[in-house]
Image (cartoon, rainbow, N blue to C red; front, side, top):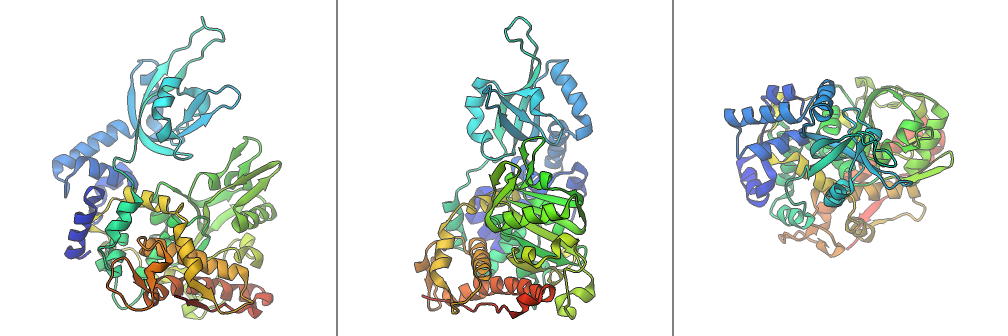
Length: 498
């Protein structure tokens, strides 16, 4: 990232930038910290480029407060047998029992279940606002022990209890402040800011292709609800890292078996699945994933991806998670190398055109370069934890879709509804990502403008609408290969009307 952009970044995002050096990754790799935790630690312990003493402080903190799963038995012994109050940085999930009103919690990373825990009323009322912010919440926990008491009626069993909770986010999340800061960057500078926020060095990209822009399309599910995408790419382009290590709001599933119970609803456990607790679900290395019941899974996915509603048995649920397929593809199957059926190597569950039609767009992962040292950030960047939290909050802002509905028009009365909706949904996501300060249709103007609060219709078309149309066009082309019926369906034409 150029020094001028870095200076702007530090001026306008004073409390939300950290110095990142991913070219020397051994330190944090050894600690096993995902990006959002790493940047939280850097922000807490370092004022700039980390010194040796500051790195030592981080290492001491992690060893003391971020235990590995195999250390959990020793932690329980300290809590239960030694009556210690133990502080750990962890992901917590709260459970409120409807029949008794008892509040309990689980620590999914350590296998601690709600049957073994309690949050007593005083603590609950003190921390509930932070704890109910999502299905799973990160924070600093102080754990203690409530000893069993046989003298009570009913008897009280021993429980691990939550004494204190401090939210993981040490700064204010203000969309208005984020939008105001965005006004001071050109769109090219903003691309660099976005790349730095997810640990990439923009200077490592070539200037004669659009690999940088293609890379940023991976962030679209971070900002838009129920955005369903397919990305096929060669190995080593960083798919797993971005989706699995940068944001705490997504879920990456690599290989193995995926079932309807795990993804949507488990009848036996009476628990909703992954789509109910995350912003996006990534089926990574999709060629290696098997499905317990192909027909059952296909039917569940089609219903959910169409409407956001899933029905399993007598349970009906609703969720906002996008579904992403991510896999590797051979060179000869890439569209730019001759085309053909790019989905041929995918599991049979994805060989049905009606299911593929429900994916909004396609990311051409072969346009993204393999990860090399010169693509890793070494300098100032937005705190990844702050950035992904902002992206999460933008999902709930309906102003952007209102802009799209007012300015994006199709010239065909017979335009297919799915195509139109897919393009509009993708365009909305691009607008949120690239121009978060544009929140009304009046800010999209006919001519080139120097007003920081406006964008020209030509720039809007080039950076938001046209890439959205191309992403959907690839899906439509592949549908025509899968099913002759779709080969007769023309992609609608879209215009920007002011």
